[in-house]
Every structure is written in C-alpha cells, then in structure tokens.
Amino acid sequence: ILNVEQSPQSLHVQEGDSTNFTCSFPSSNFYALHWYRWETAKSPEALFVMTLNGDEKKKGRISATLNTKEGYSYLYIKGSQPEDSATYLCAPYSGGGADGLTFGKGTHLIIQP
Amino acid sequence: NAGVTQTPKFQVLKTGQSMTLQCAQDMNHNSMYWYRQDPGMGLRLIYYSASEGTTDKGEVPNGYNVSRLNKREFSLRLESAAPSQTSVYFCASSEAANYEQYFGPGTRLTVT
Image 1 (spheres, rainbow over the protein chains, first blue to last red):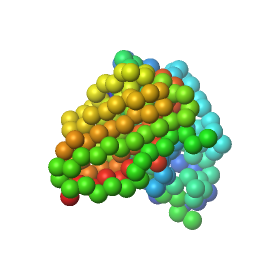
Image 2: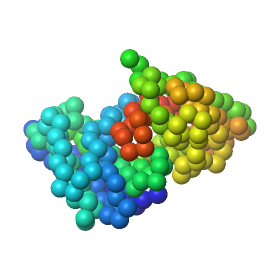
Image 3: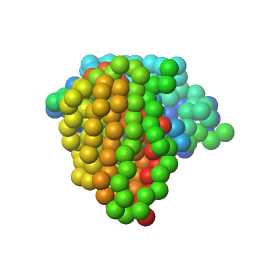
C-alpha cells in the first residue's frame, strides 16, 4: 500500500476557467500512474495510464504530466465545463501484481456556471 | 457490449446474514477486482484475481470470500454480515495488473 496524496481535496472553479491539481506518490518502485474520473452516481472511468518520466497525455481539454523522479503528476483541465464536475482519482502502480495499484482519495472538482 | 455488470444494485442485510455479490465482464479480461468505497477512505481493494483459477487478498479482505467461477465471473461473499461492511462495492476488470481498469456500476450494501 503506497502513500498517495492528492491536493486539493476539493476545488470550486468558474465555468470557462482552467484548473489543475496534483497527485504525489513515492518515486521508488514506480511502474505507472493511472488517472480516473468519477462522476457522482456513476463508476470510475479511466482517463490515462502513464509510465515514462516527462510523459504527457491529452484527451480533449484534459491533459496530464508525469514526473517519476520527484513522484508527482499534474492533471490539467482547460476551459472547464459543467460536465467536468467529478472526483478525479490518481493511482500509482508499484508492480508486484494486481494489488500494486493504490488509489488516492481524489480531488472533488465542482464547476460553477 | 455490457462491459462490467454487477448484481444486485442495492441490498439491505441484517447483522449475521449472508449474501453473494455477483460480477461479470464480457471483455475477455484476465484480471478482476473487488473494491469497497467508504466516505473519506477512497477505493480499497478487498480481493483480486489475476487470472482464472487464482485469487489473492487485497488491503481489506477480512469478512469476505471470493470465487473466480470462470474467466467472466468473480463473486464476493459475505458469510456473516456486520454493520462495518456497510459500503458501496465495485467490481472491476482489466487485461492485466497495470492496464486501465473498467468498473461496474456498484452495489450499495447496508447492514443493520
């Protein structure tokens, strides 16, 4: 079980603004970093799986960067829309099998019209 | 294409009762997982199955048993339910340990 920190815990953003939040994890024994979006009353959906230091992934207005040497990842949302309201989970994978994935507690994002 | 399905969606049990939560996936995935989600705790792994015929304990296995019936199905059993097992339970599957996971809709369980 890894020590995974996500900050901030919650975030209110005006529609149209851009925002970002952080996932911190131990840099040792790193294999990959997952990001998931979890909308209220639904189930988590995968956004990205990232493995390489300096990696950057993009899906529409959402992008993520990865720094494995210092143990953090940023998730960016450009031009926030109401449908972006969700909890965003990160989960580092440390190898060793299917139990090597540890979920953070998430950043709860609320987009205000 | 249904993805990951779970039954039931809701369940209320009395302390000491038993029940089985069912999960099935149609994506031919090797790995399957059971998580519980509690307020302020995030998703915690109960049990997982890396492949058909194998199961292993996760972070919080006490009070639960699992069966990987075949490649498609992975069930979670509560033999004697306790109020501490009140939670939302999610089943998930993936091709392998480090691949993205696909989640079912969840089962909301209340133990009184």
